Image (cartoon, rainbow, N blue to C red):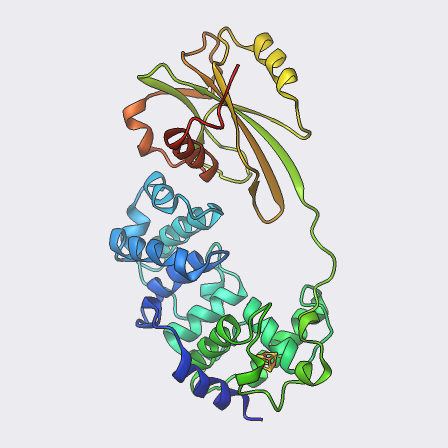
Length: 351
Ligand code: SF4
């Protein structure tokens, strides 16, 4: 089998035309790779185009304020990616005079960049011989070579990296890496691989051994943590109360309504008693949102609406004009709540 030739021939015929494939600018490639972590291409595209428009150079990104960067990221989730982008841009600006590093180890040192992303930037932008190993690559290799080792074990990761590196076309690592990832995304997909028209039909050991559906192997499953957020939407028609999330947690540095969090579900009756004991005013309505799913957490949000401002103000709360609310980056759950509030009153429950 000439793996690299077969896969790159397939790629030339089948690849999608994507804007970050038309450039060797390492800054643009880095942006696209960070945006595409945990995000589908269709969703990430608009964000990529927005970022290269708003911040055409890494210096523009470094000089922007964090609030603008988070605002532009809004809706994409996993906000640590945006904070890391901004931190890394400032680092490149001060340490390398705004010139994106061109060596694998220096790229790997940037905040938010792991071995996959460093290999992607090094190969796509500088044609350096570093093999990428992402979810697509794990799947393709585990099937073609019918590998049983779990991809989330140390031993498995070492083995897959070694195989990927051994297969890499040293003369054209950029196209080879693009090809294997695209092959995983379009041809050898998780649930419906197109084996009937596959260039590896004769060589694929998982096809031969009928093990496709159990490749790749992943050991254990991460435990899901349930979190119950009760948001207090204090709003007198002109002003609204918000607070900044400062803890090392999801949505760090974003803004939200004041809230209390529980580790177990509270009934509406229990919450009403809590509200009576803690606030000078009482809510007029409440709204129970559908659960919000993150990779290791399920967030259950209930929004309590107050038509006035409370007397007892917590020191972390900020009173802002309603007209300036859009200037603040907010988590998707708040955004969704406001959209739903505008759209329909049906699910809203009067106290
Ligand atoms: S034959 Fe099927 S499982 Fe094997 S590489 Fe091709 S698409 Fe993937």
